[in-house]
Length: 229
Image 1 (cartoon, rainbow, N blue to C red):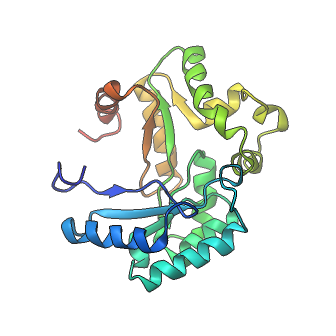
Image 2 (image 1 turned 90 degrees about the vertical axis):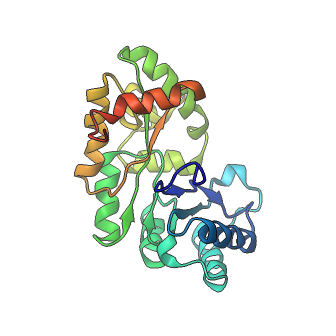
């Protein structure tokens, strides 16, 4: 992506600290930085307990990992955390450029901004289905949510945002799906994404739930209503 463009900035979303050695990650960072100065942002995170047998207290593991990145010369300003919960968000402000929350809502974005302050970078991801048929769009969204409704971190965050046990019970309630997967017309989707900006997000990564060959056309269709053309 960097080689095919001249100004595009790229972030990893995310490098998993349990499976990616900090020394090798730092080496890769410096190689990319040398070839494409100031165009790569290193996103790291702890993933999920259910997927990592060596999982230990996330805050301690991340601090240790960040210590190693410090030792290997990866600047605080060029890394972000996949932070969702309050403690992780505070850590992102202290030890990185900011936070890259995943599978959240504009309400979470507002809460995150309160916690990390105005100077930290905040880039919440939001999923999108370009379909005006609500039931069809929700079916696509539920397909992607199925995994996360098995994961403690994701379910805990949904409940922290006010969703009930019934909402997070598989396959996920309509209000839950609608909250984390924007669908409808391109204008309706754009309005939903802009709610993150209104909640003081610096950048909103958009994950279009579609097949690879339809991705660029979908992003192109969204660009106009988002004011990116």
